[in-house]
Amino acid sequence: MDSLGTGTYIGEHKRTLDDKGRLTVPAAWRPKKPKDPAESAPAGTFLAIPNQSGYISVYPPERVDDLKAKLSKVGLKDRAVRVKLTRFLSKLHEFEFDKQGRINISDKLLSGAGITKDVVLLGELASFAIYNPETYASHVDGTDDELDDAFEEFDL
Image 1 (cartoon, rainbow, N blue to C red):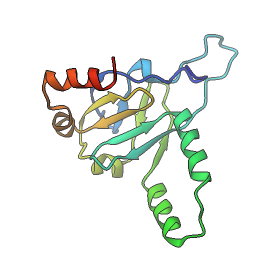
Image 2 (image 1 turned 90 degrees about the horizontal axis):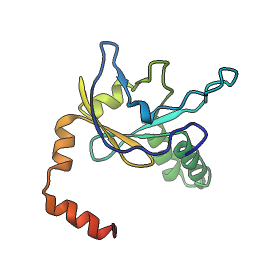
Image 3 (image 1 turned 135 degrees about the horizontal axis):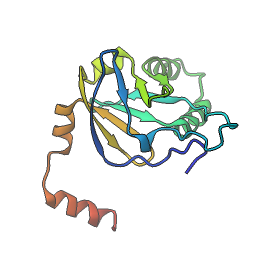
Image 4 (image 1 turned 30 degrees about the horizontal axis):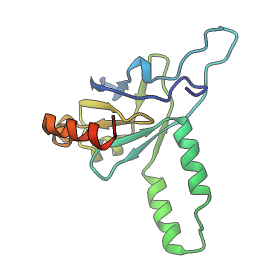
């Protein structure tokens, strides 16, 4: 586990945006508060990224750092590369948790994912996703045979 106390995101959680558009994230997924009151709270920016499959991917600070490292190696001599990078970066939204463990995702990202009120949070081990419930249902609609296939494919 990293210094923020985050790092493993698992499970499925149904939530509702509050009247101000805030989303309460499961306690286990939030940055951990220091046990010693003399220590300052951990700092770290999370990053919300629109996913091509119609949901929002959320990267914790350690994944944000990885993304920064990757993007810093991108050659910017080619105009087409610069344009793609600019378009990508313009769609991102950074945030931190408030004291009650809530986050506020941009209206643009929520709208792009078809989210108005209800959401499904899905842990993806090193990150988590925010889904419109209908999109989520269509992504996970399957049989127990698929679960068996996953166990076999991942050698579990």
